[in-house]
Length: 452
Image (cartoon, rainbow, N blue to C red; front, side):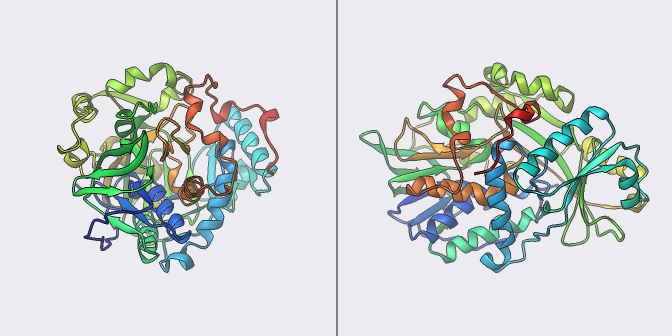
């Protein structure tokens, strides 16, 4: 079964000879970067090896959340919330953004303590959230037969439609003058005196002075040609959507066994709340030490599997001459086969505790690869080794909600403008300068910073 149906868009056919900036990757971060740069009056070409929003930007849960967000991302996520609130007016498209709130349930005291920490972090940034008792959760969802000790709910959290949003943003960038080029893989950079002077695509060369690499799970392969090591691995999620259901909740809800989000069509996007699959590939061993803190904290959620992807990754990582077809051209869209046990198991678990979902019928299943970094915080930075190259990648499953603001920040960095937030937490060098890897749940209360 193919991946989710993404809204179509008419791409540009002609390859421009020269632009100010080339954006590599047609996901939500790349599209948002292209829109912001176009609105600054800069000429832009966005190139994708497949289609706009076809990979993880069109396959995620569709959550737009401030809650349970790494504190280092909070200022950027606050900016993203403002951008989402204006997205329909800005793009002229209803992308499904609704502030319905997200409920994170818990059945353990340890997790309650963690939610208290997240609640305090949100309060420090002026965001209202509430810790619910078990009785309050039961009163809000009387038909939910789940043994709970409480929940964290944040009313300003919301949802949007992944299959609509990225295309709407790209189309708006196109109307502002950006060239949107699909099935146009960028094979590599052209350099002059060590600086970016253009990109080599499968259709020809585009001259430019700046490039933004926003290629998601492909960023590691692209960057390594230029001596830039991004410690990036891929995690595969399995998701399903149901046909329309009457009487289901408006809020997105998370628990260990399932996570759900209402869709514009009245159906629900449903997935396991914690289980994903990790295919063992050469990078799994190369970056083992980098990921040890994350593995120790989340070992129970990861299903490690041997896979033929081991050999595909060896091939894809190979550095071919730029006048030959690249790995990017051989895989137009990553469309992995979902694990029915995980997707269907989440729906089964949901049906057992919530009668309204017992008759739900599955409309579609899909899989998607999430690009993750050791600290689960993205890179949004200049690549100092190659002047003119900037990188926005490693959003670690948080990219959809924060994507519009990540694009804004990246555009400001490229254009040399004052940035909307302090970008130091997103620097690339943190993985090579001895900075200790810190995971969000490990932050001490004393680490909470008041927003500027």
